Picture 1 (spheres, rainbow, N blue to C red):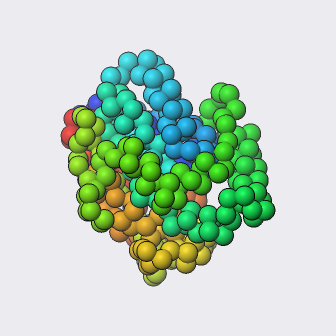
Picture 2: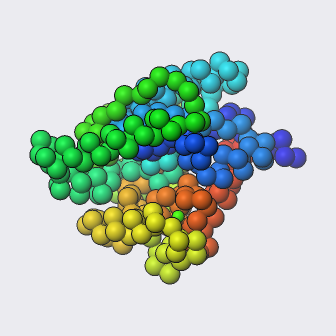
Length: 296
Ligand code: CA
């Protein structure tokens, strides 16, 4: 029965850097939110600062979760975070594990992003390059705030430097020291599947020539961007999705780390244009079933 295969707790979708719910009606979780809902899942994409530290975004997420628990009458929620949304979700679960049934990281930089490290090297703190980069990021984030049509609410704070520090390898190492729940103990390993009553899962993709640069991605600019960004990687050379490395994404139970997905494909962007053989929406449906079977 369909009803038995949906989750007990609502699914809360947490976006990454420069994330949103809908921009002038266009969804961040392209075709994912609608598909899950059509299958009977309770799905709530949420809005957090598009440009800020994971802890600040995490506090905003906790406020939203508290409101959702009241609105829905649910005891807990399942958090699914894309990119920095994974760190945001991890923070919320570390602070209020009693509210969270599970945390799922989709292409999350759980050990930092080598692209963020590259940006920091190219535009060190205090230089004109950093000021220019921060201005560009803030301007983009402000536009996102103005065009957001999926939620109304107060203007959220922006901090480009805090955001950059939150995504670098050194910054995430500090974050991990404070919030280690679900992290693998060895590089490339898996983490604990359950900590403080919260289940932890992750999946991610890598750029795979002949697959990820074919199909719909032949016409998708962000795929080209990911291929350029991938050239900044030194530790996980040839093993990244353009923004996050394969092993860096590991958290809790690793469902898969080599799907043919670039960093944007993992949320079916843009307009559902993905590489050959990729089915990012299918991964979300499969995971919804997985959570349901686990009684979550
Ligand atoms: Ca794409």
